[in-house]
Image (cartoon, rainbow, N blue to C red; front, side):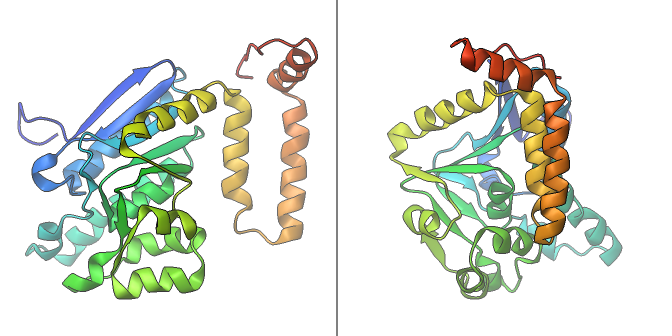
Length: 264
């Protein structure tokens, strides 16, 4: 990534089944440059393919800025349109990768979560934010529009509030983000790490095979008509009955012990 010897823009640590992917390019306020997006894609692919990883936390090494969003210099660069078109393909690839990861994801949101970074956060299953976090889509203020992330915003936020975010480009605080459905939980900055770790630990203890099946079903049924969704989900439940983990989970419950997941 980048020039030889340059510091990678993303750090990744894995411990106790929890992988932490941290944006680490403070000089650009973690701008989502091609290099940053490539590093994030590589990090999430690594987590997807590593059976030891049971939960992924997306964070920033800076509590003041999660990410200021897309790389504006790249938007204005004098490049052929076809090159820009290929470049922005990274955004949907990354969003889809997170959504289809098969493992639960938590965004640790602190500081500014803006523009494309809001889409990145919304692609995660859960968002825990510090009280000082701010969220917004300010692209319209610089003559751009949040095209890539509106599909994610409209899936989490009511239409009127989503339109307000997109059209006015104003920032909202963490409590308002929680109220309109962007954020799951808001905590003081001093409690952020503890809160994120508690949820990540709980998620990492779940059956990996049932978690994968459940997450895939959550994504698949989202845009189905009700009858189609119910038919699909009935089939998934029947398939779940065939797994060893569902038998182990029920047996452990009646035996009043912790389950020993086989992952199959």
